[in-house]
Image (cartoon, rainbow, N blue to C red):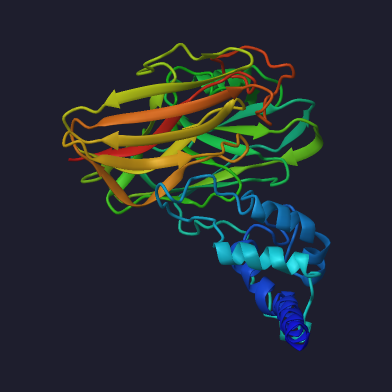
Length: 413
């Protein structure tokens, strides 16, 4: 009986010590400040702040749910497949600490010993720039998703190589994402002139022939900065066009998004970077067309063999809509070596963007690029827009489907 009582005392003491260990002041605040605060601060893109004990306590169950289920911080790529730059991830120990803190009462600890919240720079990251382009003030009133294009002529007199580019959303509460294009046809100006309001509405790009995608922005994105001697070419006669996605249900909100550009001193000796949907739903799709019947799942495959030239891969941007559930992209060299790019096991249409590699990835000449995308058009897919499910086919609308992996590549000189 004494042994049993002593064992119970040790177990009870261990439980009390564990509950005291997880406090905001000592264990939780450092994790929040280091891994969450850059978005979840006053003025940040996270829409609400987590920098005080009171804020975190009020949202404790939401914090626990999202970190335990891998929803926050938002980082869709599989870190067991490849490691990428600027990863927003928590360690298993950090996840456990946050979860235990909630389970054990979300204690504050001695707030006088808590670290001071960091000061976050919510302003532009690209402070050394050559050109800033600002769209006119636009008032958003929309019931459904709105894709609005704005023409920003750079008025440059010679070709330039872009080495830095930053999108600065004018209204973080309503700007869902931004795509930046160049247009040498000036047809975007014609479309803009035909709309009485600033800009014009167009889903799926700029509505002009063969626009060139320069960059993209989603919440949490960093400024695009090219490696040394790399640049994106901007022709002297090109217009810059930004396409902004405003979500439905926004009324009487104004926006004036702008972009900053940094140019190389000269185009001589620069390696040109191109952004292209090399693996997509049209070219190289081996088992198309892209149709997913109602109440079915389907996997599509695509491939592309690069020409006899070495390529440097800087970043990758997988893209699907709501029926897509997972996607993977990789290369196979002529020597049959596999070069992994990215794998997303739990696709979320609302969290996508360009992912940069830690180092430039060398792709040998004549390598084959491969992509696989799995779609679930059943009621088991929580993002399925139709209930009961409807046959989904290729299209630009959110309820249609697409697949592609955009890549930023630079050819060897």
